[in-house]
Length: 249
Ligand code: IPE
Ligand code: IPE
Ligand code: MG
Image 1 (cartoon, protein in one colour):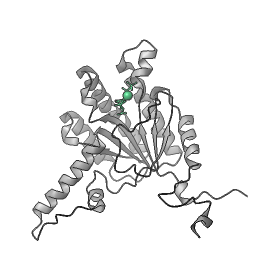
Image 2: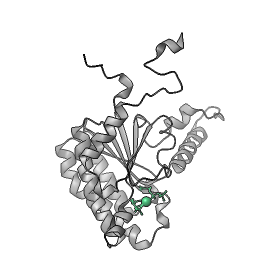
Image 3: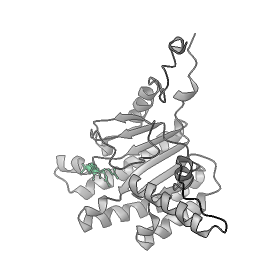
Image 4: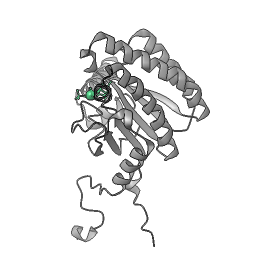
């Protein structure tokens, strides 16, 4: 008889650090921007694959708070691609009832990107299909700092006595999207073993999966392989192995 899948091996939220566009291009003698163009096609492919696989939340790391360090041409090319993605996928999102969301510092984005993002978010807000969370101008440290700032502002505005104690619950409640469950699985492509400031708070107990393939080379089979690897993990959350409960006694 098939072993039932334990509740904590259901993968509800997947986060992807889409890395390796530049190296993909360099290997082919192409400019970095060509890699980003291919990376955009992969993002569209993987969004579709994730929804077919029953993922409820998919967070895509598209641009970090540190990526502004890159050449101005590369940065503006990426911003143009983000705009293109939002425009071209809007109808597709509506058709599939995907809900588009954002995480990151919206105020630090160029006004045209802000508008495109807010339009996509508003236009898909009522949908109950997969949620696609775009991490743009996102930094995990920045998000935690902004959360603390929001908490302080609320304390300043309260009529009674302000609360000078900040708890984990307060930080969580003031994150960009506190209703979204923590990622079960974080995937990084292009073989780097680091998080590069992605979902620092939320990834405390996420399973990590590193793929050596560059992001433009990623296919739905790679996502399936990542999910299959996830199914074999034993998520203990600081407890004891779930298949050896006798250790508890
Ligand atoms: C990921 O690919 C895309 C972004 C960070 C925007 P990179 O551009 O970082 O590609 P590599 O790491 O240089 O190969
Ligand atoms: C992480 O990739 C950011 C995104 C994928 C958007 P980077 O290429 O910026 O990360 P580092 O510089 O290799 O750590
Ligand atoms: Mg990179």
